[in-house]
Length: 250
Image 1 (cartoon, helix red, strand yellow):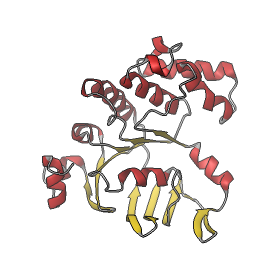
Image 2 (image 1 turned 60 degrees about the vertical axis):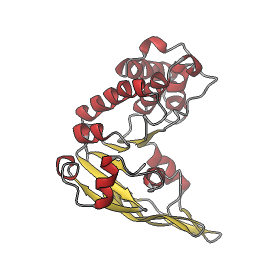
Image 3 (image 1 turned 135 degrees about the vertical axis):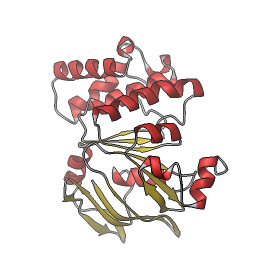
Image 4 (image 1 turned 45 degrees about the horizontal axis):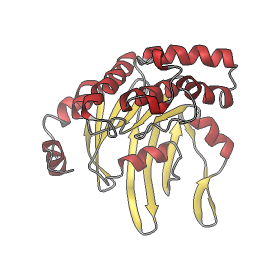
């Protein structure tokens, strides 16, 4: 994945100011930043849940075509967007599970309707992924019957079931009670050890230090600092990053 000069503007407010990123196969990139730094917007632009105002995005060398409609940037080919999105999977802060569906139904629905798998294939894949994240015994439960940590693990299983090339995590532990954070981070560390390509927006410095190949720190819509975690977390050059790591920036 290559992102070049990505910009995003809402009215007169420029949230992203030319952010670039390259992620190779098996890379785990931890994206850090204080609230309002643009990190979640950056992830949503990559998945085209938000339309970038400028910049280029390539997946496996394929440039996502953009045009202008009614004076605003827009994807040129909706079919290309659908095809690209099928290669990416996003895990959100708030789980985004269907409350009227069981856990198993949540993990099979997109497989059937997006990937065209048979119900039998989808169920087999779903059960394997639920077992992988440690919630196989919850297959018949509904989201309201699960803890936050269990719901997020179901959301990860749903993403994995789509066989994505890149997994995008948008602060996956921020909505969890502290005692439930580790169970989700444990699953994510396991995925990193498997060699999954992952972009992770997070405040979990320990995860970034242990699991990431590269850390990117965003501030005010720009890349303030980036590099290997052992270097940038141990000896940050940016004063803003030092403040963030010390906990003085919330």
